[in-house]
Image (cartoon, rainbow, N blue to C red):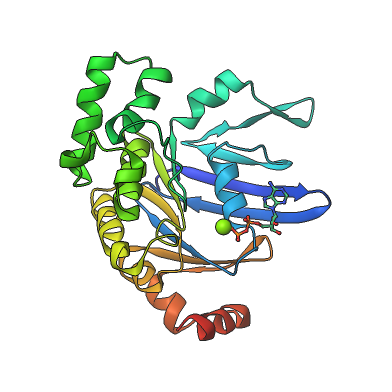
Length: 255
Ligand code: ADP
Ligand code: MG
């Protein structure tokens, strides 16, 4: 018996001012899978993640989490967006980490991590602080809990951002080029946290330029281009025997 995929994306479309950015994105991801997404700039990767994180509505198509549709519903044959209240509940299931951390500058690290727990989950301040500290410890930042983002390195800020997403106990974690804004010497500490997370069984979609990370940690690699998935394969197959000319061309530029 095959397990139901934890996340299913069906025929997602998105257009901005006449610019068709997503042109029918389709994929499944199983629980515990780590999917690396490669692709040229402007191809729609961030848009795809924002739609999956329910930060923006799709024009059409479906996203199913554990078999249930999220983000929109069908009404009289049309896709209808859900209320902001329902979206807020569903968003807890999908953690997102951005290229530029997006921490609140006026809140300490622990306060940044606590915020979703107190404001969305309604957990008490006291309990939220315990859970947030625990999560900061898991990303190696227990001694930085009371520091403000400006007092932290980029690598530390990104680890706070990962802790902030994880503390909500999501079913899936989405990463949008999480190391692209970092100085080279800080990339490793973030990738290490992500690798540990993958080993712990988290389901992850990682948009990245880190080909070595994709090869070592992902169990599926995708080439995204022109608003669609061009190729999808196991890392070894993807990097050594790509089926599509577009993939061969892309890899010749990154290797
Ligand atoms: P990638 O992450 O692969 O670099 P993006 O998803 O950021 O690609 O962008 C894909 C295309 O969609 C680009 O042409 C970009 O300018 C456009 N785009 C993305 N977000 C918006 C937006 N909010 N409004 C208008 N155009 C957008
Ligand atoms: Mg992007």
